[in-house]
Image (cartoon, rainbow, N blue to C red; front, side, top):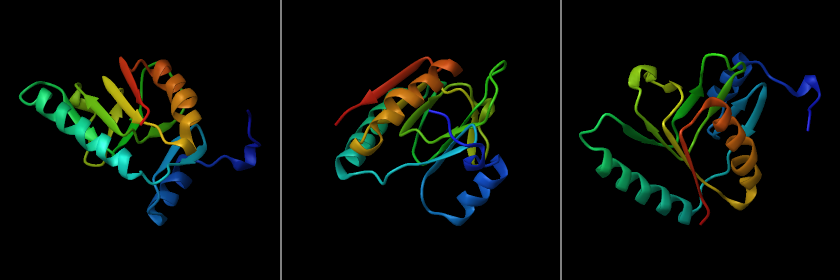
Length: 142
């Protein structure tokens, strides 16, 4: 589905929106997407997966990050601006880590779907992550 050009925002406008809001906002090629507040079951699953991955990766090259943590997807040959906030990200190439976000492509991304945004995770993000070459994408359906 295409949207009228007047609904698109610049990356600068997106960052201004982020400064004025406590809501989790993602940015996909000019479109701002709002993430719903996580449910209790979502938080339990996220916490347990984070703990397991943290223990598994301790002392290894890779590191797990949990939401909210911005991932600015960047890969040579792929155009557009995409800033996503996955539930969990495993990052092995730490050269893209900054104080506020990660710029690059995580090795693994985990999304815990909620009824209100299933298509965003199952279609939109899946296609984006494939385009950028995310090696592993887990979708957890509570």
